[in-house]
Image (cartoon, rainbow, N blue to C red; front, top):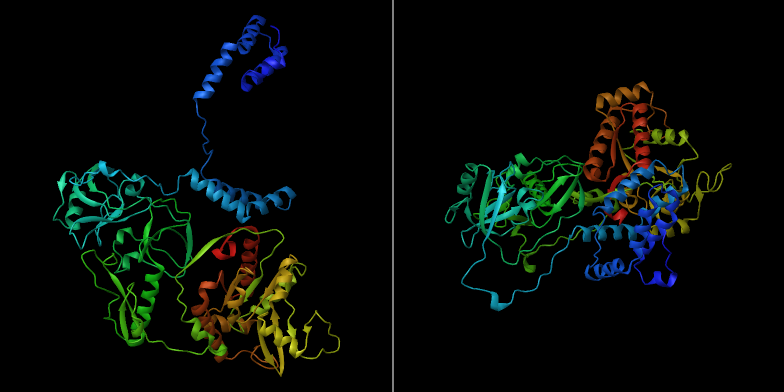
Length: 602
């Protein structure tokens, strides 16, 4: 082996070459090959000529950082799913689980993915004026492979994943909507507002969208478009908003949808990934977890609210001829030229045009707690933005059982607490009545003065409260928070109006609606169990038929007003089966990520 160079000499050489030489010298005893070859390789690595070439290479080549991956946020969510089953086995897993859910780290991962995916708007310099030619229009030629994706107007179906319309001002055929994930969107070359000049060499000037449809239907294989780009149109990013739908929607039966074949039908409770909210009346979305990348059209929140108000107005007035849309031009229903009508008092205005202040009629209503349902009815549930909430090992979500009196909530609560008293517990209520012999402070009740109780109520510290035989009773929000921090599961069965306070980011409850079965099943099951009526002061008699009817009537009203706040509905036909469903719901919340209002996570 040749003489090893000194440290001073080695400092003049490239560090990577020096490291390679050290490794060779440390490993020479393990080689059984020719010593002459090892001597040659060592001499080569120590030669000044080789190191000079390496220095030249490093000076010329500019190193750039490239992302190793572009879905770091998705991988972190998958890691959270894996860690869930290992939290009890390893403290490091628990620490990493908490760390990955911190907002600052999640924000960093989202920013990394946005940069890695180049998910930002490019800011290109303005074209110098001397390079512009006013006598010529920029034209782009786009070729797409024909598929079964829609491009059309109304019920027409064209195969490139976009919709077209006739521009009201120019009479030209323009692109009205590009479906996310479709062929047009994936190409990155077709944008909303682009003017269609030719299709497969056929001039479309003066033609209708239906004429263009016929041209495309007769085409096979590759379709060539000649387009004039829209002015000022830039690329758009895909929205990451997830929403829970609070109504059923059938696109095939919607008379207002601009393209039925592009519509996305869904059921109440389904999670939708809204990819575009650019259109005021029609969003683009796909179902969460759906492998089909192409999005579909759904009514926007504003449009669905107006449709519901319109339906209520028709039901109240008995008029089925009043149209929801007016002022529709050649663009087709629901297009930019269609404006939904909104009825305010006795005056009809067009939206989104601003209503003249002088014409608005305002009705002042004083809020009465006893008539709170009338105000809740005015809430129109359409979509709720949601996000995944991952369970934390030391923080338990309270279980809230909502339903009419007499449906069996108290028995379900009793069974749940009896199953594991160390884990499940009821919230100790407050009262102003005197302490009875044998009662202990903080066990049956927290006994406080009337002044203290009214002070808690005035400060908004009571989830619910009421008066019985001249004494105040109530449940404190601080009591629930103390149980959450202690790692125990608070089980509550409050009045349904208390959901306004409980369903918040402060408590993050699991809300379960306990619903009655049909009248015959309700009566049969309660009679078989010899159930006592809670409506009897002494709890000494069975239910009456009128009470069964009242339970069903109240349940329907609660569901009508608050169904969008329920995590699950449990029909209490058989108490044992209902309790098993209750247990499964609680276990899922503790072991699996669940969709909750986005504000709870943010």
